[in-house]
Length: 186
Length: 185
Image 1 (cartoon, rainbow over the protein chains, first blue to last red):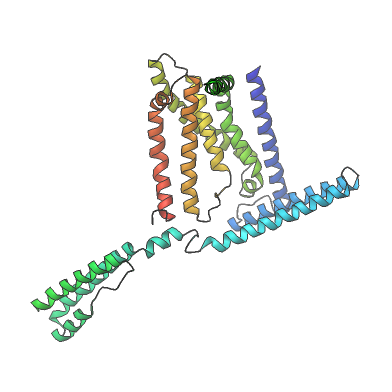
Image 2 (image 1 turned 180 degrees about the vertical axis):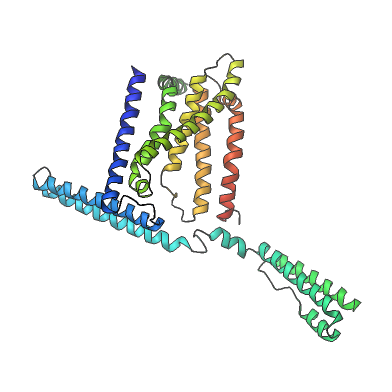
């Protein structure tokens, strides 16, 4: 008996959801066309919003009918409208706040990636690659360019602070030493 | 002393009531996944229909998703049942029910549209996965302990492979999301 009732519950829920799907599909077939294959994602999204709006209007009409038929009092109807207005306002405020914060570098969607890119460790790696490449290119240019110009360029190649005292001190000393060794050999 | 005895009695009563419900877990675990998916599709039917899903496709999707959860639960149950067999307490149906029920709870948390009040989507996802991992496995271990009269320690031991698999599946994803969300900077 228990198993039969469980199967019946599942079947009923499945049937109700199936009917809901069919009625939604029929609505779209009626409002748009039967062949909806060529619609874009945005168009489909708008369709869904419109359907939700339509369902909302039907619900409002049902409440209004209840009021007109005397099933609910004026106070109850006003309360319903007030509650609905408050919910809508809150939803709009939340949505605006969410969109406003979406690209915020501190708490937005990509704040982690942004913070990672701005972190001294990441900047250090990037600058090391850049400085090493510059130094190597200058050494290669020794064959073609004037030695004095290269010396000036090498002396100008210094570590730019990345915002971490320890890293900046260590790397400044490292590049000063590295460039001194190259200059001594020149 | 009296208050301690009262506490023990209350606990005993609570366990007794829970045990009454536990015998229904095989059935509950079996119907929970399709019911959850049916409710999910039912609530969002206007969106899925707009994207071209028919009623037949919806039923097929519910069946496929449920089959996935049932098979994962069955494989978890096999592992736990092996341990319980050594203690002569094996009951595959009940272990399957516990696992399927625990996974269904995780599913509910996952399908509920909640960003936990965090606008950073990666961070929210990371926390959500960790939350699911904790709730899911806590329920699994706790129900196993009550259903088979085991200590939590023994229940953890019975579920060790399940916990390892869940950790391998969920925690790297949570870690990745939290790294992208900037949790470790």
